[in-house]
Length: 287
Ligand code: NAP
Image (tube, rainbow, N blue to C red; front, side):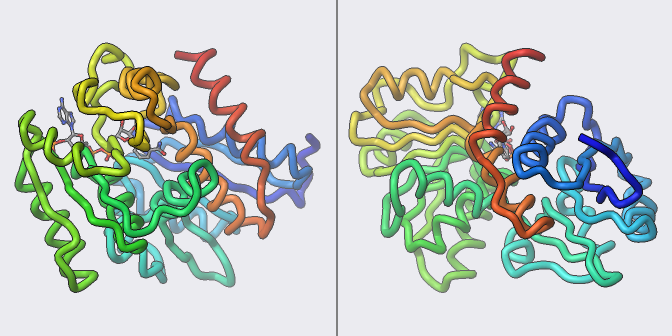
């Protein structure tokens, strides 16, 4: 690629940021589409966040991804946020346009679109969500938008209750409920689920041997989505496959949420295959 004075700048901010796969993934999309952009990672400490956003504005940056721990903290420094971001209090994509900064979240849409592409539309389904943190919010609201019945199971029950309440009050129904991660509660919830989504960090590198759900609770009819992407095949994904269930690994959501950001910045649908290849090679080479 050739960098010139016309090359547009994209990037990702986080703290830490050294292990982010976004530069490789987005550069693969840029190369595949033959666009004049470059995508870099910036290590921004929380106390420099406001200055960083002002700097990006002044520099005429085209767009930025926002990752931990800035997804909520960045909100006061931007001009407009999407309805989806407002609902989950989280921004992962900034678009700089006409002197304004617009914030949106692509996590929920990335999750949902990757389900649709692999399994078809998920509507009116029974879903067990394991975990109640930031990614559970994105997934929960995306599924609630498609009229799914949600059981949120979390180690800290108060967080599961908070998420279920917030979904129910937003949608004006009682489609979400909270349970603990006691075996009997998970057994009951898994027993009625069509789709199981792991949004906890259980099973993430270097904790390869752990799983958030006992293998005997997985049936061949289940669809299982593990948001953990490192390792590419978690114990949950492996055991789901062995149980005859269909499964998706978190690398797919990473790619899809990034693909939606890319389209917001460039107006072009990127090659998700090129992006996924870059993510998988980043995960297998460097970790
Ligand atoms: P978070 O907000 O910190 O939430 C972490 C969740 O995991 C909480 O529900 C927490 O329960 C639970 N948890 C952590 N350790 C546990 C343990 N030992 N036993 C049971 N539950 C445990 O994190 P997040 O941002 O939602 O991210 C969670 C995972 O999703 C990470 O692995 C992250 O890499 C992955 N993720 C992937 C994508 C993607 O694109 N594929 C996107 C976002 C996140 P408590 O509430 O009890 O602490």
